[in-house]
Image (tube, rainbow, N blue to C red):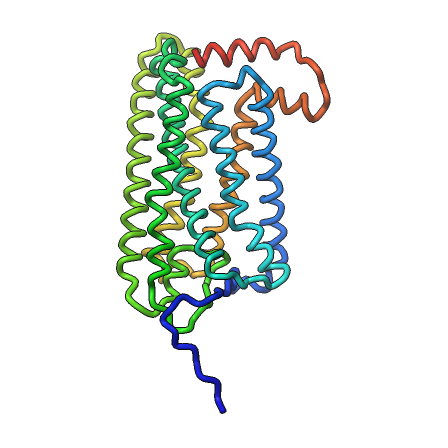
Amino acid sequence: MLPVPNTSLHMPSTFLLIGIPGFENGVAWISVVFCALYILAILGNGSLLYIIKTEESLHTPMYFFLSMLALNDLAFCSSTVPKTLGIFWANGGLIDSPGCLAQMFFVHCLSVIESGILAAMAYDRCVAVCSPLRYSSVLTYSLLQKIALVILLRAIAVIAPIPILVGRLQYCGGNIVLHSYCDHMAVVNVACGSKYVNSVYGLAMSLCVTGCDLLVIGLSYSMVLQAIFRMPTKDARQKAVGTCSSHISIIVVAYFCAIFSFVTYRFGQDAVPHNVHILSSNFYILFLPFWNPLIYGMKTKLIRQRLKRILFYQSTFPWDRHYQLETRAIAE
């Protein structure tokens, strides 16, 4: 007797993540790259957090937001990469439904938090350049805590409906997710019922969050540019640009990767192969946590000097005091 197919309309008990289809022959190299980037991201962000925590002169609003970014990046890449490596190395693609929904929530929630932190950092740079004398009095510790709480609550509020809506979809026995992690639309495409609400909500949420944060970033840096053009000397203008260059480079990389992934998945599926989209999604999750501490480490002199002290066990640097005074002058 032939087995009766599962035609249940409820969510299956498990999903099967297939990884990156079409790259089976190169999975060994892809997994090595993923693993290397993941290890470097953990080391980079961990070192950044340790340096900021142990160096008193870095206890300023700018580095408060940088610490938030480092913590978020650690959680962001850790939410998907271990499972993806399990798929590559041990065919561990099975994931139970609650675990899949939890991964979906954390991946998208951490993405929204990342965007909110970048917007907050743009506001921080705006205050530092436009009102340097009022920097410490405006960005008080109390205000920083409130900003962090708003960023967290906003992310939870906009992402919480997503796993709920996915759980209410109708399924017809299918459980194969064409992705390496439980991405929202990848799981939605497994369902056999109407997907209209999920699709519209995902699109509206992405546009609103990204649009609001880019608006804050745009307004902040327009004010920064106006302040820079009004500065009397070339050295002052170069110093002001230097305080913003690291953040600008991170914004460009973050939003370019996010928008490319979003557009190709929503509107470019005929032009961009599905496996390329999956690879770009993983690259977005992995590259940002690797890139952020690297760019801040290269462009922030005080962090570089503290890192040299840790690596080479040098107890003092004759120029440390100079950089501490310079950092405090920028903060004030």
